[in-house]
Length: 488
Figure 1 (cartoon, rainbow, N blue to C red):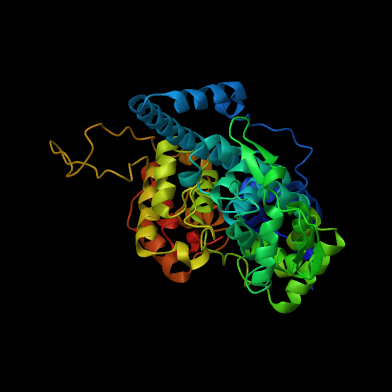
Figure 2 (cartoon, rainbow, N blue to C red):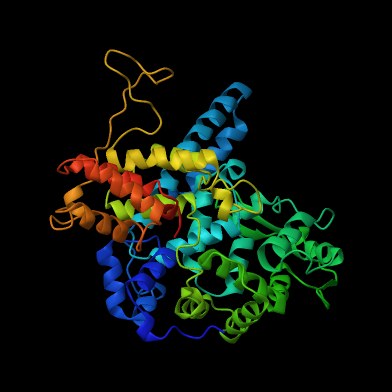
């Protein structure tokens, strides 16, 4: 169990699989570079991202002066009712715009950053510790939480859980900031146990009640946006949580939870499912938990073990995970070697595909897997492929001569233009139709299409004369509309 993949089994296919799952995919040259490294160096090139310098600066508004924030809060509090409404509406518009900018900033990091696994982990933790800007209503708080995922997502489990549990966005999301000894917030304690660290059925109602008492007094200061412990609101009495008793604080409870054997089993199974795409069996869960505990609850050794394991490269695993909308978009951008669409369009596309960043549907996050594939979502993927490949607007139908399409917006859409065919395929790869089919499969599928899809692609190309760039772009779009392309 968790035996390392033998070096002689390492090849282009396994390297592509590693890049698809531990990152967001890549071009044939990027895959070949990993294949040439061998499994140990290839895995370490992704997991060992810490020494690499940051290439993306934070958004300017994340550096706001706390005194300026205090000033705005005071102005709002002291304003007359009409002025207060105007200020509130202006702030809401401002926050919506910042959320758009934050989403795009993060997508840019995923698409072109030097630390793809760090961003993939941030995406995992965003779904695990699901928090929505719709309730938090503050893009800076969402950025701060996102930064926690980035800084601690590959580190120690207890440290990460402490950081997230004390995060102002999370405290606001789960209504913990108002929890006092007279009214402990049991919902916060329940979510920490059930959704974050233990799983359903691995705690009692008394554990929830007692843990809620321990978390009383946890709040944050709205001006500084920093966690604060309000001692006067804390219940200092004795609590009993998961069989242990004492005058516990919230930090004590988190230590008790993460040291419980079920916590290691729960979180390593979640990590495995995210990166591998299937729930691990009992024996594998035990092996993952043992490896995690042996590393003192550090995630990097666990990730190395997963990405080096024979189980990770099993034929039943490779290209058998439905791409999430974010994975679909970013991998498409990387494979097409084109820029991201503008912020508003990227955000709207992900919303229509079913995964709006910073706005998970509920505290459980996104269901994932086959839930991503509905008739409407698939159609939206196909339509958006047209924009990414051809430069056609996926949201507004093209008008005929002298006509305006029904329901179209009055402002004309300015297409981004098709991708550069010569950048994706050499003249030799485009010299014959069979070579082009093989090159399309290598870049977009990292293998072979199913016989039916391959025949449809071949028939399409055979029906054309000498191929021009437009024909190649249509062929790319056809490949991106196959079932195989929806899998990683």
